[in-house]
Length: 129
Image 1 (cartoon, rainbow, N blue to C red):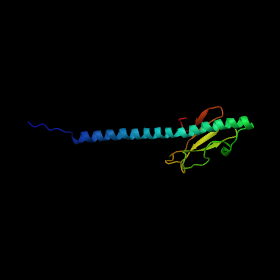
Image 2 (cartoon, rainbow, N blue to C red):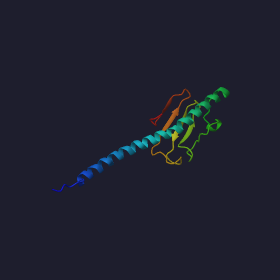
Image 3 (cartoon, rainbow, N blue to C red):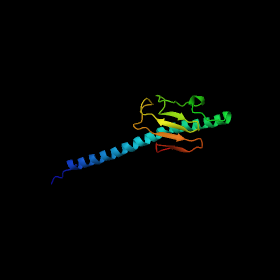
């Protein structure tokens, strides 16, 4: 009696479907983690802006909304060297806005921002601050 060895076509199709589902779930989690990693740039620059704002307040007695007045490299428009563009308010609060076009490749599919107040409170719409 000869015994056939191997897999049936149905077994192979089921395995391929399961692997496809796992790959699709893994890819979405991977892209979320990559985007979360890119927020490190925004958080780092915001921390530098906060420190510069505090130093300016000690020297001049007021915060500035003009980033070029601060000794920090923080682009006010999307450039191919940063994932974020930055703004500050006269209150000392600074915001990092994720570039959806014109920023460092790849750009974000959806815009979000991260904020840091002069008191050190994080906020924004990114969800991972």
